[in-house]
Length: 214
Image 1 (tube, rainbow, N blue to C red):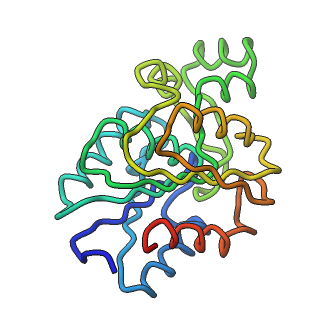
Image 2: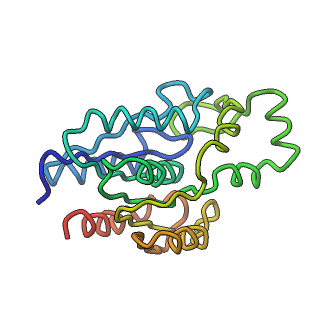
């Protein structure tokens, strides 16, 4: 059993939050083992003005409050953030990445195209569906501009488990496999699931436990 001083931190995905199904499921599983899984709201209640830089600042404060090593678990954009933080901060001991959203700028570009990105820049905002908040939410262009300030394919010196869905069209398993080839400390597991991964939660928990409590 790991030390009770260890902190476990879950980073939710884009347009999601602490009330997501994955966060709730994993929080319950950690509680059954006697641990708290901390799940901060990454946009801090201001979805329109969120950026990767702001997310990193929030995660940094969470690490500052920890009393020992930190394990990061991240979903989609949260998985990208987990890898990014692990590449920069020695307080992170391990990371579990669920459908990690590497190359975030390119995924927005693939969705919107040149014209869509130009319109987003012109108006300054983009309306996007949100999984937690009611109705479409405004998203500032600052997020897209901020992507350029951060490594889209971060490498980290700590053990990392990346779980990819074979039916994931948002972050195909080939993207995760390509990232893992540059990360000798990373291991990739593919599951028969899509980007949401809700139907694979028991398997995800099984693989997570094997990393955390071998």
